Length: 632
Image (cartoon, rainbow, N blue to C red; front, top):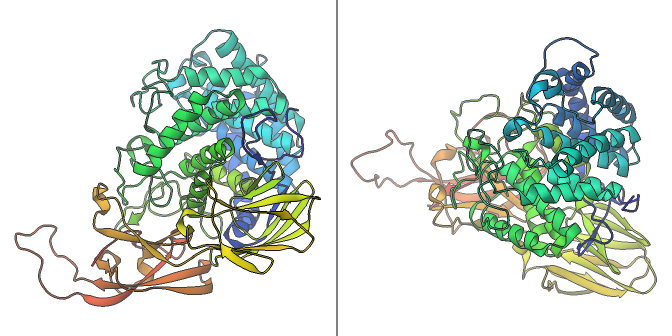
């Protein structure tokens, strides 16, 4: 093992890597409440049991029985159906590490045994191509998802290994990884999967096993991008990020999930090799994405066509794609950038994605999911299998098990360690343990801005507690230590650092400014020019029709009016929340899309518009919703 076995998380650089900080594992952080704690509880009680049922019902497990020669019938689902099972296995592994439960070990053991029986003697494993197209293995890499599926198997095996799970799953993964090495590294085949994902997974498998060829193959796959080696799948080279070598590309393009998984792999290879050119190009694209191609919720992918990034500032709220998997891939990329640079701006973006684009993907009961996450829905939106309302499952079910594995591993993204320092990046009630240090965390975040850390065990000598000061609270945050309250002055990385020799019972209070605020779009975003959105702390808000007395599409915000916070312990369908009331005007409904005369001078009606956190929308029935409202 390259890493200490106690480090139990999805992304753990080796001891000699270029990481500025070291991550904690899912066992080291206990989240006991708040939205994050609630999501983990619902994930365990509702989502994961649903996912386990769907592995059989949707075809992932039956397909492998076909590949193993143990059943007869037709293949079910898409060519990448195996990957759903692999993500489900990863979710179960992290959940078993976090809260051991009945049935998890049996599911992993049975799945590992079946995978072993389905795997070919040479290590190849993909149920679709073994059953449906055995003569086309590696011949359709532009759209086959063969390496993509392999990558998710590797990540499941890594999770199992770090959680102390079934070694047979690791053995299956290694045989497949060795097969890829023989074909695509030692064998000279320059093929590249059209869907990036295996790159980051190969690096993680290297971190667990120490097998250098896995890292070398990941590096080769990244270096070969942009050389025209991916055949045209009909979507063009931008779709699969094969238009330019990665070191030359300045902006994220094409299929958003593919781009962000690729970026995660690029930063992973930098961390293990020290190739600064890889980090530099990835940071350059990150800056361009955040400035010009990202929605307010942190979601990415503005086009339904190709599930893709659009042009700079092409961010229509109603046609936003914002795939749930893209939000997850964004967390993966930002986490690795945070480990590589130590800069809090990446933790800021993780927070924005986590509390908005990602949180919205799952219903309050954990049993329905969004594939697409728009920022506006009209009352007459046509509901189909992917648009409209959340669904229990999808024919292309990449998102639900992806969501589950992320929620199970949330503790991994809370804090990191460095030499005699603990950096806290995300805030939730619970406990943080690292070596000789134990901290209790008390907070009502994100509903309340105060976060209290109490030392319950500490190493001898001085050490530092570094607390991220979010950009939205910069200049308006305070830290209280030993009864003295001072402005929380962040360092160059965005953290308020308190260094002292700590004693049992010492406390630090971080108080963040949760004053609600209006946010205005760049004038180049044509679709929302002349509008504003409401934010409070890390939360983006939206206006649902169910809360309005006027048609939500006729509302206009009064930017001079006070934004009033209404705390609610329990709203039916939502649970704990904080509503925001805003002064607004309601115009008369239009009768024609266009007229030859200017708007009438009839004064609009003064009303109160009520907003709810964006992540809680679509839990109380169908209806219109808007994040951006025109300004009065």
